[in-house]
Length: 195
Image (cartoon, rainbow, N blue to C red; front, side):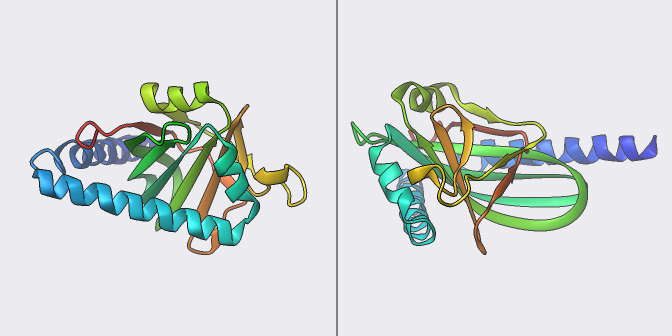
């Protein structure tokens, strides 16, 4: 029973901290700071795509042919039974070249300690999935895993995880391309301060 109370307390603290960071960090930022943040996010996205193309050359064709894509950088932390993370990113409509700046927040349960940084590259084959992701947000998983396509299968999407029909996800860690994504209760939504 004490373990459940500890888990609930830890999860509440993480949710509160995540909310405070996401709502207040840029609330008082100047126009100049917000402009610099956009530059930083674009640079992160370009660097991430370059790394992806070096790791998985077929991904370049998949990104270029898609209705659009999104790139996120995440910083996560796990303490005992609960963990979480937050990140920023950008979604790009390939047809119109319109950029939408976005945020992500995740809550993760399970025993362990550690800090993990990773990058996510979403690919949307059709416009409706891209529009839903940008305009309505997206929630990824509770529990479970998504496995990457085996090399030689899946064509341009080899190494990517199928999230739903027409939606693919690559996860890059410091070590390279992750072959499995654990569902973590992640929410993606528009960044009100940057759009």
